[in-house]
Image 1: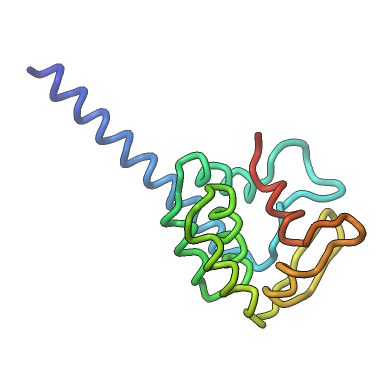
Image 2: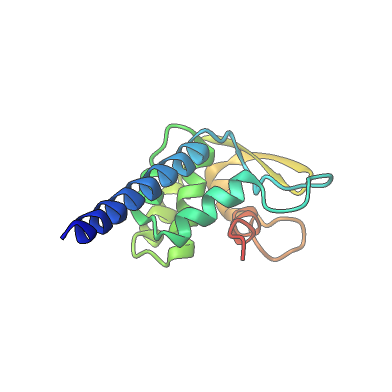
Amino acid sequence: MGLVAALALSIIGSGTAVARKDDQWLRLLQRQVNFTTGRGKGSPPGASSIQRAFTALVRDRGNGKFLALTTAAESAPRLYGLCGLRHLGAPEYDDVRRHLSQDLSVVSGLVGCIRLNDTVGGVLAHEYGKSGRTVFEVVCDDLVVR
């Protein structure tokens, strides 16, 4: 019986550790003022802290955490939240995207080393260069580390 109890406590403890780590990743995304992958020209090799945080929440199926980000006070976290819903195929994605497409809050972004300033709705609507994709799609597609 002692072994079973120890195993149960170990499992509970590891679940708590995972939850704490998810909260750390969430706080990192909540603090962002730029919508970016965190990677650009001259970046060190490997994933950025933003990519690691985002990927961890996607892998943990953090739908509720991403949904909470979509109502953050700052603009960039709202876009990270929407991007997370997109990666998870969440049923709320279309409604949240429709709502954020009307958002006139200013947001800064970085695509590689190019700085962009636009509204949240503009990031969702405006094509980046001649890529055929929006700024949102360009950044969002590169947030998950494979």
